[in-house]
Length: 334
Ligand code: AHM
Ligand code: MG
Image (tube, rainbow, N blue to C red):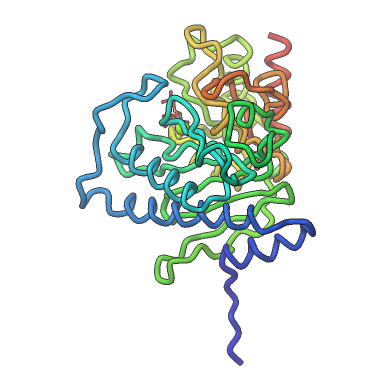
């Protein structure tokens, strides 16, 4: 008579823990910590125009980008949730020059590290356009020890879990632990992320291409030719649709659901592009592959790259498998 149809993210995560018979519940707790921080950031993003949290913080991060107040706030929320949760032994963030190791030598430490971009799409914060959070979770290389650089410099193929939160027309959390991709929408009336998009699969092909075309004259020939192809031919001689929000999470999320390709290539000025491997490209590549899509640097699989530094940048082509293959063909033949 009283059927309850909703499945909350915490119920779902706990249920999925049974897929891993030797799991001790640490990953479950860690994901729950991320859920808590996401809800706090959601709350402040939604009230941003009413409180004194819009605008510049007045400092620059290690990438030389000026930090917004919300960047700093979101960063603090995630660090605090992960530190107090005690299931990870360290974090790396877009907003911190170096990784942060939690706890001291001799203490017991969580067996995971988390790399994250606390608020992606910063340029959209002040103008009320969708922004997001991206996270990736690795097992530590030396379990029990404090976090070290080596923990973060693992290739994406070693990811244990990854996800993103999109603060959009609704707030959604999408994540994978390597067994498919599931999406949860925050129901503000009960304060819970509820399963809304089970087992997400991305279409093999789509009709959307997402790239900052303002950079056209500075792009490699292969990318220019692929853009020309999108505008003139596309699939079956029907031009593709251009959609570029300038928030990676939002562009990625739309393309994941509808089918499409997102490209942030290298340019003549910045041959490695703009996006960071550890906490932007790898987590979304993992999700995309789990949903049946592909992610490459123009030539090679993103998840196979062994990082050399925390804030390493990489050219990025991600989305529907057939579209990424086509773009790769243009890159190869250029
Ligand atoms: P951020 O992490 O500082 O916000 O930078 C990353 C963002 C992505 O969300 C977005 O796709 C890209 O930068 C937009 O860059 P551009 O304005 O050069 O097109
Ligand atoms: Mg970012």
